[in-house]
Image (cartoon, rainbow, N blue to C red; front, side):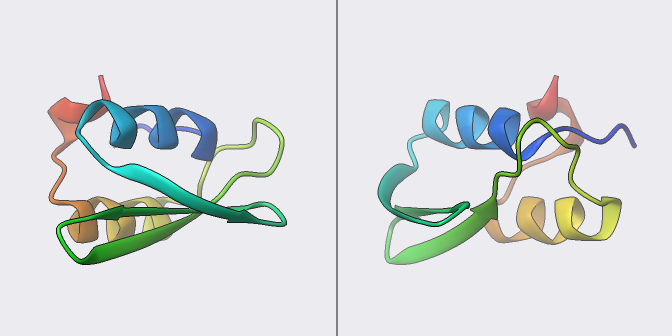
Length: 67
């Protein structure tokens, strides 16, 4: 699995209908259907693979959604 940056994941979530509800420091909080996800956005660094998989599971994303 290819890793992506938090910034890129945030863009993908917004395209999938997630709404940015707040930013606190470097963590961007998104909400959709009473679910919320917090994505760390540190410059343009890639997310670690375990964190990326966890966020994808929470957002019901597949690897094909990341392309």
